[in-house]
Image (tube, rainbow, N blue to C red; front, side, top):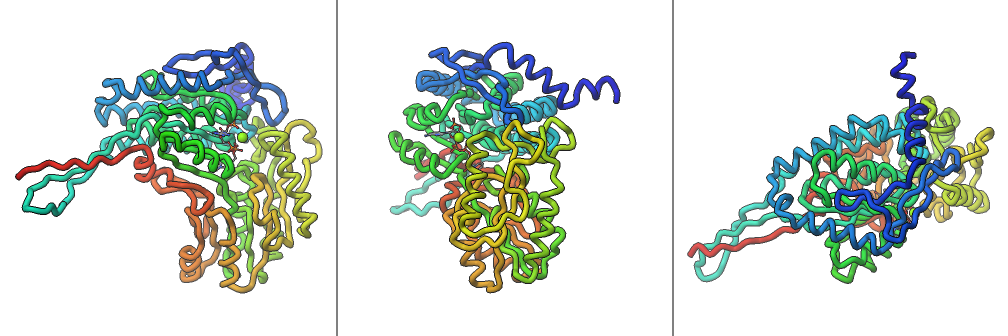
Length: 505
Ligand code: NAP
Ligand code: MG
């Protein structure tokens, strides 16, 4: 090993980061400055692989949220931002993408420390995905305009009618802990591309990469106050949602909090978009390539320790292939290398917290009491006594109506069901409060498209799963949310359309 690569191993980077993090609490980032919470309060963020405290973080209250919203408003109204050319706005996003790329390794290790997710995978998937997201939306400012429309006025008036797109204003971005960096990128990139100013509220469990991202944005040249970060708990999120100075809320998180946000945002009728929970079906027909399906279905439920909104957590395997398929998925589950994500061969880390560990193990118990059978996993892996590790788990003999088939577990637990009647299969796959995504495995083109048309889901993957790209819309049917992120639709979420009538008579 060369001297350079030994300096840059995840463990070496982690040691350097931990040392600097332990020196002083991480502060809020408001108006381009690091500031303490007005109350002086802080809270601990911990490493889920060890359960140990990483550092203290400023604990924002409503008074800090108010300062952040006012800083965002000032920056939003500043002519330097409002009149900035589309190309100049693009360049800021490109520069931010370049800085994330420069610091990719460090950001991946920071996320690993704060969230537990394996550093190598995080760099490949989340950090690369965030870079791609900023580069994709960097192209939009110069392409997102209005239209000239052929209106038909009465009385022979000659009218020129055209539309313009204007930024919605100050956007509150509230994100969860499962993909902290990507969720921040998915929201910040289209919001600033559309010309908004933002206040980001990361989850209490994972505030560190969001704070780093705001620093990088300032380095990239974003005016102070365009990107603000308030770290804290649910009450800070609630203060944002209620704040009369906020024009739009973009939220990713649980369906329960999403509903509370809708209720709380009525004061000034904020525009609200929601990316919520899921319970996505993986539908396997008897002619499918079982080996490809098994590998992808395992990945689709166990990646990120199952803490993924689109996780394919309900398997519907045709009865003719059920045993073989489930055994093959179990083989992939047993082959995962579980451990501290700083070790480069680890591809399965801990759950985020003790609370989440209790939720996941509680659901396995509920499944067993309902009559399901643990085919693999179901407990803490032996030898990993610290941290919140839970084995990748398959519950066989699952039946429609069981809680483990209906409710989002948000952990590495696959509920496996078998089917024989195609019509009943569709009805069962759609028998869910959620509608985020679905996987279909077959080589029969007609069946594939027929099922794709029949499932109620925002994303459908045929012979693949969990592919996501900033060019194509992402979001849910039913209680999985409102609106779509990515693509042109994300630009629309952060803008208003104005229709201008000019009398030329
Ligand atoms: P959560 O409890 O709903 O929290 C999400 C965010 O909302 C956090 O920043 C949280 O702050 C904040 N918050 C809590 N109460 C609030 C309130 N009353 N008003 C405003 N903000 C509030 O979700 P989670 O447990 O962190 O994340 C897991 C959930 O997210 C799962 O249900 C998952 O399916 C969903 N998810 C969905 C998608 C998607 O795109 N559809 C993607 C990822 C995750 P605190 O952290 O301080 O509580
Ligand atoms: Mg939470």
